[in-house]
Structure formats: C-alpha cells, structure tokens
Picture 1 (cartoon, one colour):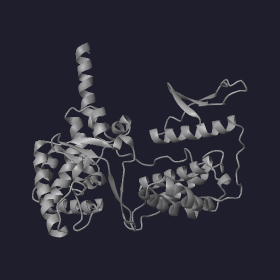
Picture 2 (tube, one colour; picture 1 turned 135 degrees about the vertical axis):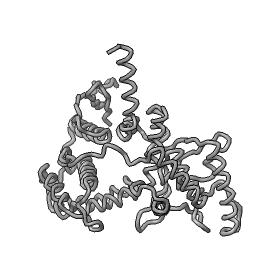
Picture 3 (spheres, one colour; picture 1 turned 60 degrees about the vertical axis):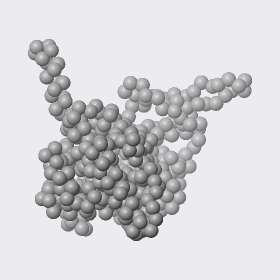
Picture 4 (cartoon, helix red, strand yellow; picture 1 turned 90 degrees about the vertical axis):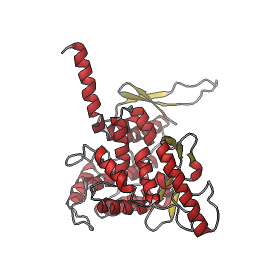
Length: 392
C-alpha cells in the first residue's frame, strides 16, 4: 500500500518494495506530485489517492487489465450492483441514481476508454439548458456540479478496478455564475423573533428548533438523539447518531460519517429547564400512547406508539409553517439555524477551531470556507490593531 506524505506545497508518494534475499528492506520507490491548485480538500485527497494507486501499479509492474469493450452504461450498471451498495450511504446512492439518469442519455453509449474531457464539458453545457421538471426553471449549478461529482466517483472506481489508466472526468467542470458568498443565516434580531415565535408552538417543536439554534447540530442529528445522550449534570449532549429518510426506504439511523461528527455539545440552564419540561411531556405521551414508562433508550423526538424517531422532513415542513404563520423570512430553512448558530458563535468571539469542533466538521478549513463572511469583522479588527500599533 502506498503512503502519502505532505512536504510543503507538494506530496511525496512512497511505495514499499519489500525485502531482499538477506531479509533487508529494499529501498522504497518515491515520487513527488503537485496537486492542481483549484481542487477542494476532498477533491485533492481523491486526486492523491489515485496518483498513489497508479504509482504503486507502476512500481510493481502490474499491467492494467483494461476491458476495451465495456461502456459507461455497462460499467455503471455493474457499479450500482457490486460497488455502490457497500461503499455509499443509501441517501448518497439515491442522489447518485438521479445524477446517473441525467448523464446516461448523453454518455452511456461511450466505451470507458473512449471518454474524453470534451464529452464531459459538452454534457454540462447541455444540462445547463435543461429545466427542472418541478419548478420549470433551469437546473441549478449545484445540480450540474453534483452530476460531475458522481461521474468522477464512478470513474475513479473504474480506474482503481483496472478499467482505466486515468480518470477522464478530472478537471472538466468549471462553476458557472457567481458562487454564494454568504450562507442563508438569520441575524440576531430575526433569531430573537424566531425564538419568541417558537414559544407559541407546541413544546416538541419549540425544543427541537431551539436545540439546533443553541448547539448548531444538524437536523438529522437532532432527530437521532436519545434521552440517554443528555447529561443534565454536565449540561451536555452526546451526538452519535444521524437520521436519514430516503424516498421509498425505511428510516435509517446511522453513525456519523466522520470521527469529528461523534461529539459533545453543551446547553444552558434555561435550555435544561426546557428539556426537563419536555421530558415530562414525553413521559405522559408514552403512558398514553404506549402504555409504558419512558426509558433512557427512547428517542427524544419519537413517533407516537413507535420506537422509531421522527424524520427530518417532518420538522422541515413544520418550520415552513411556523415562518409563514409569524411573518418571518421564507428564505430560511432548518439548516439555516445551524448556520445561524455558527455565525453567532463566531460573532461572540469563539475561535474557528472551537466552532469547527462543535459543528462536527472534520477539518477546520471546512468551517473557514463556509463561514468566511462571519470572520470579516474579526479581519477588520485585527487589521486595525496592527495598523494602530505601527501608527500607519
């Protein structure tokens, strides 16, 4: 297995060549590579993995077994049957199937080895001309970007399986239009109005939405909470599950995707009072509908008469009703509450590493990329301090 080591702006790929007849380790093979500058951290990681796999094959003189006749359609069918189910989450696989339906009419008939960068660029241009069947508007750039990501993933697996010597889709996509510079967040005044509005709703919805505002957890993470995850003495919550609902599938409760996602968040004395009040409500509900006592292993937000948690979409629908009822901005959504929590933490002086840890980001750079706008005031303040100290 090749190892990858960072060296300044470059990376060193090292492949072990085993031992000689005397039992001495042979000198490893090494190669320095420079990833393209415009890659995201995830794309860079994938690019390096592919470069390492290719270099390892070269070092071991393993010939690539390329099936010259297999088409993208045939390989994708095999990929969906044999690779994707064990590699991807059901929710990710469902999105990928939608993306496959979009590119298959254009590229499915090509042999893998015949695919060229211009085929992908032409595909993206065609997709931008298409209209969404529901809204009637052109497909969003995020949709086009998703198709590209899906293709890159499938072709990377084809390359690793020996069907290709390189990934022809790499660096064929370029974002068209303006990137959103600012996340959809509520300012402090709007957040206060929202909190006041939630206090007029049922205690279930008040508790759910206030928890997200207070901690910045994801909506699926909030749905996955159990009473045993709440420590009232420490005023902490252990986030260790995520709830996903894919159309046509049962509710999926799974572990966080990354180690960073398994984390603790903290709540105030006021939030503790609300949680205790809501627990009393749940105890009464459990007696009424289940004819039993509430137990620590029960989900905090649970369906009546069932052991399953409520789905994130239930709260998404309810949140829209609350916004409309109280005349609050319709552009907000449940995920906006997470962005709002992060932005308010940063505005309150929290450092990026702390915010990143509370949000469950695996890399601090992710937090910086998403919430760069929230650090603008800090940048101005830092510049002012420097210039004042130098009197310039």
